[in-house]
Image (cartoon, rainbow, N blue to C red; front, side, top):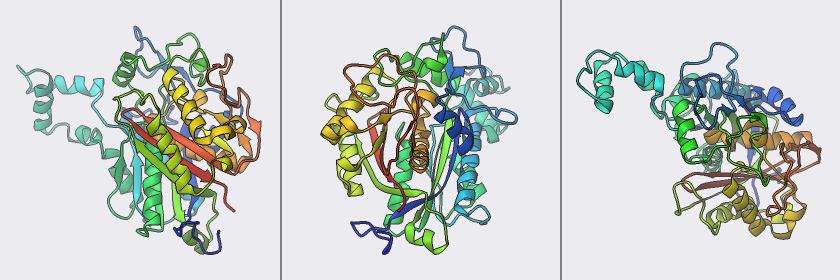
Length: 426
């Protein structure tokens, strides 16, 4: 497999040569990994903004080591920049003036937050105007140019491009909670098509702000366990009551195996398959027959050229919502069949929460760390198994187990479904 640098379908083998990570448990792979192996939770009460009167008052907030940025886009960028720096350092590309390939960034939609809206509404010149018209008047004044640039959707990718100087224009990706996996898929496909030998895929999200929290709460999507936030995310349990909003970032340097070997880089693993399938059913709910999720998983397995029986472990989407967890089980049963009974399936969202746009990238990094360390991360808070979801969820405690091939799932609102097949390097 490694002698001719091609996979069984004649395409370049895509290796991962560097990774970076930020979660609510720490900045950097080592800081997060050590806590995750111990089964510790990064979920805590929110102190960044007032939560009195809210149904949900907690989340997986990332604490900035210096002065906390003033807005979510700024923290989203800083986490991405840190993760990219760690990944480039590991890949041996940190000293390069320009990154030698394209940049794909999974990032959340950017919108003005309450403090910025208040400032704009109080700006002189909007007298007699209301709502959106006042915002337009403030924008036309030219006094808030940097603010408006910060809150544009592409601002995170553009700031990263200025810092990293990738080849070509940066690509911003927003496929809801599948975004991080989609960014990786775009990088893989660019390498396979021969457009580049190297790509940088980043997932980053700091959406833990007041308005977003209220919106998800109005959808009844969030856990309301304010008495024990660290135990709120409990995927696959009978008592699960919603997901926990969280922040984080991950970066992966993707490289053709031939390029990596030629420059003496260490291969951390391979992205062997990518699959996606869109759902046309509902803005937030999954299609009842699970066909789109099943299709995404099957497409990833087919793309990887592996048999379902070769999947050693599933890094589950596992959000802790009643519907999603059940749908994921049924979809895995449909795709893995009897092999599922002997396949561990765990969710790190039980510890770090749901990082939304960043989740697919974060879970890819954690999958490679599990492969490298021979340790399966646990699903914590697993006290009351759901009899309708008979899975080996690696309950509560990490497990030492050698694995070579991982299926990592990412399913998003709006019917965006993506799956990755990741494997150990030869």
